[in-house]
Image (cartoon, rainbow, N blue to C red):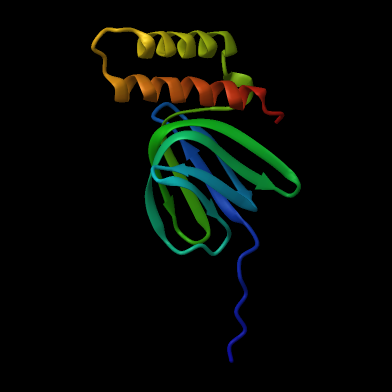
Amino acid sequence: MADVTLPTSIRLEIVTPERLLLSEDVDEVTIPGMEGYLGVLPGHLPLLTGIGVGILTYRKGPEKFHFAVNRGFAEVLGNRVIVLARSVEAPKEIDVARAQADKQQAEKVLHSKQQIDVEGTMAELMKATTRIQVAEMKQ
């Protein structure tokens, strides 16, 4: 029987249209997929998935790091995860006052009696709420 050695870390690369935000070896990644959250460990089978609005988390040793992610794709290749997203923000980059104003505006539109784009407004509400949650997380 062959001795199989599994990898102990996975390379995480987070990219937006503007920049490479992160490229480092991590122990675990949790991605907000379109159908729910997806956990990725070293040696994961290859996968291509859509990313929704949510919190991307990665663990390096005992520390956890969080980012607000807004739509995109993730490619998992066993020893590497590449996240390509429209926008990604670390807690320190988030303008909380603006996120709270965006949330209030989306809630106001949803409660109005006007004909609205419910799906688009719900997406804006989810994005603002996620940004607020991530900003409150300790990094």
